[in-house]
Image (tube, protein in one colour):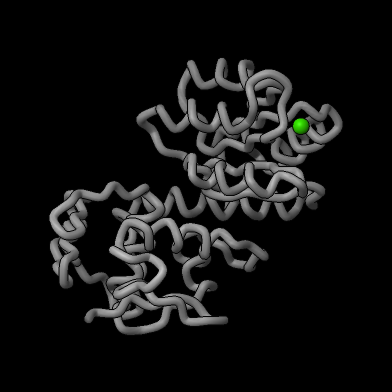
Amino acid sequence: MASRNETILLVEDDETLRFGLTDKLALEGYTVQSASTGEEGLKFTEEGPPDLAILDIGLPGMSGLEVLSRLRERPESFPVILLTARAGEGDKVLGLELGADDYITKPFGVRELIARVRAHLRRERRDRSSGDLNAVDDEGPKSLNKVTFGGLEIDFDGYVFYREGTEQSLSNLEWKIFELLIRERGKTVSRERFLREIWGYDRLPVTRTVDFHMSRLRQKIEANPKNPTYLKTVHGIGYRFDVP
Ligand code: CA
């Protein structure tokens, strides 16, 4: 992947880690905006958004989660990876709710982080050049446009979704997941396939990201998320969208 000139915002207060990551990312050809506090990090974004942000959650002063919500107020969307402490399980969930795309738990290998950075940037580039998910399908692109299942009305062009007449708002990631589920309706889609097609991973990380986002999506799709009509879990494999 030599398509560089991409800017990465890195906010990390641990100096050793920050220097180490800055060096490695620069060696990979990225322009690194390296900050030790959230305030400093946000300053960089006044000039324009980065292509990707890596945020430590535990920062002095403004926390990484606050930085994340400020970044998510911006109109541009770009991937955000959170660095979390092993103890910060709740922060991780909150971070994903606030719109982070991924997290990595400390201590981690720098190569692992770089692999994820690459994967996220690759997905962004692909999305920008191919008009989102319509490009990835074994049987060629299928346009979904507007579809209705039972009480669900989904407009994939306008990104509008109604459940029983009430509009539900979905995040960018949730739209992508929803679209893949519906294109493959009636068939089980594995967690690995979601990670590959939605998150762009080649090598599969150990992550509960898919399950987390599925449960969020289920809250919006299902009248009773505990006893879902549409979005079924296929234990040990993945998920299936059933048309009743
Ligand atoms: Ca820290």
